[in-house]
Length: 73
Image (cartoon, helix red, strand yellow):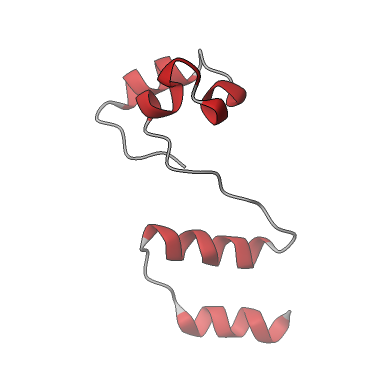
């Protein structure tokens, strides 16, 4: 996950030149220059993963929808 960049064009120009390993190890301050916040670990349940991501970014959760999903799973 990355912080919202000031310029998406500049972010993408830099991002396309840097490897994932450069970001993870912060080589040449790659992570810092991109505004890297942290990794999102994907689980086996996409709905649960999406719920957790939404909670982390502060998006409101539709609890009725979430409960319906829990009941069907």
